[in-house]
Image (tube, rainbow, N blue to C red; front, side, top):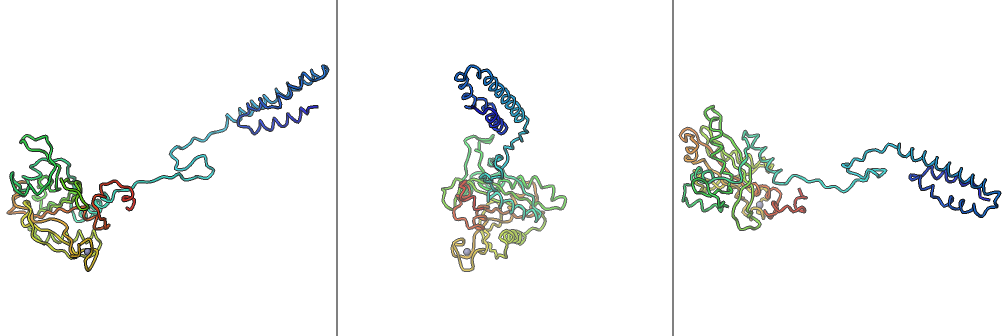
Length: 344
Ligand SMILES: [Zn+2]
């Protein structure tokens, strides 16, 4: 004889624990019970059938109750931004990778910060300019041979004078604008002290030392009685602060149309005492161009060179950064290679 109370107990226990209680109604136990009915003696069939129906009704009630209970469970909202699997009993951290500041961006911030502490204001350059700012305002008249030293990118579009626009080959393209913008400071007895750390472009043959896109920091300082001594002291202070040690510096005569006199500025190699690959064994590193601002450049900005003098310098940021971190190939800086960038 089938033990209906035992089946009832088993099924109720199953329903109570099930997350899909409806399935219990299709349990094989029910099929077996119904299959027995036709085989029973006629006098037992009625009572057995009734017992099976009562069982079914009881289980259906239990299923409904269990389903209502499941529907009421508060489901915590899933935080799709969580950095771990929210279904885990303990947070399992998912693999994640954070980006970092590009080494050039970070070093430009450091460079600007050093000059800002010396009283310079930092300004942005531009990525397309006209020939007046790139050349004429800097004492390169039309046809001046020194223009050919700048392997510039030119646009096919021309301005109202018929001149192509230029992708600036040096941050000096901002000098005239800065002199005009801050000219009023001089009348108030304050110097002009401005800095432009930004991107420049040259039509170069690319190799480990030459890249078509790189960064320069331009600085100008104009006031009363400014001389070469001020220029050397400013650059030396900057470089010692940047490399974090005392350095000897050296200036050699050079030529730029927009400074007079002009110099090439070298510093004692910060990395060796007896010659190394950075300084090619010479113990000196030629680092930047500088000089006293040419009177014609001051005049172009309506500043009287008899009353005011000043200095200007332009320094390759990539070069400074490559020396600081001993980076051998300048092309790494613009390559976007992760195995290079992850080192910083
Ligand atoms: Zn060296």
